[in-house]
Image (cartoon, rainbow, N blue to C red):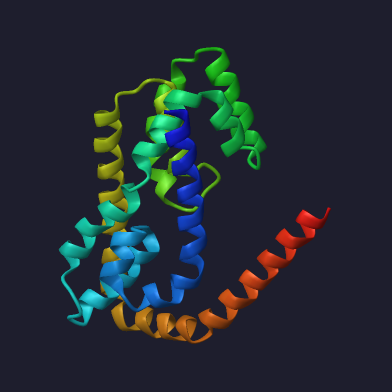
Length: 206
């Protein structure tokens, strides 16, 4: 199981890397965006497309479940299998959150369950504690997988439903912004990749 999870962790890293050059294309492909990524940005873009007749909003809405929850079982299993070691690695750049969760786990605080479940909706928004870490902590706490899957699905539908509505309401304005972003995204992506590979090669030399 450790080998399987380690391979999946590497595969998820490769997947995230491959998504970088595909961002520009995904902005113009709302259905693929929801199925592959499923985040709030894909919800806004798909809502805007639905407002001009390019797709059906509720299909986009349901498809965001696939994109948003594709890795959720893996993180839950990592938390259950690897415990605090995985939490330490995941929160190494969020010291406050790391200290809080580490202290709560060590003290076996019952309030940690409430914190994990209460923060879960915010895990699908920009913030210091992503849903991946919260699901790993849920696995560590041995909260049942089906319960967490249902809660995650409910959070995704609620958050993305709001953003699809916003995209639908401001449809053409959103698409105009997408067109501007798409015009320059390729060059920005190339520049970011060049910087990333330069820094990686520099680190390897050291």
